Image 1 (cartoon, one colour):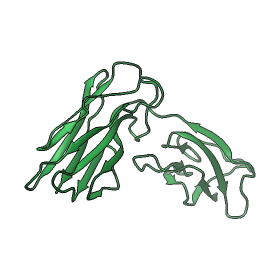
Image 2 (cartoon, rainbow, N blue to C red):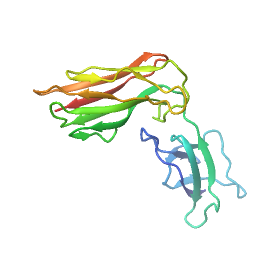
Image 3 (tube, helix red, strand yellow):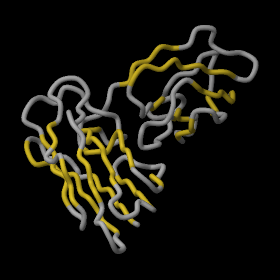
Length: 203
């Protein structure tokens, strides 16, 4: 058994880390020592054990592995495809004031927006890891609703080819006076139904 450390891929948009299973079948995050068993100099995957790699970020990756002294001289080139399109997510979020929460994807939080503040964003169709889907075809649209303010630019048309992102942005404007905590919901209004995304904005 040798402790190997894997590198070369990063977390998905929803922060799921890439992993490799150790000899006991436990998924170990990239960057941490992973026990791999060798027999006659060769390590073989057995069922879900001893080297099963799972990458959650779609795209190309160059996988490197090292025992601290020896490493693969040429990284392994891998292309990970996105999983099935299943969710809506916010992208290109811009706010006029306040703070945008760091985990803004399927759910977003804007605090300290203030009265008459604005939030604009696009909406993407993604897989369960937050990777944007591709070429979802025609006829898909998303409507953004909710809150005490006003919402302009909805419904949004999802691009039929290339990345499945809305072709335009919506803009939410908070009410002109008084306190508020508004929850906006982005939901399918035409085409395939995907899990909704929510954005909460507060003063």
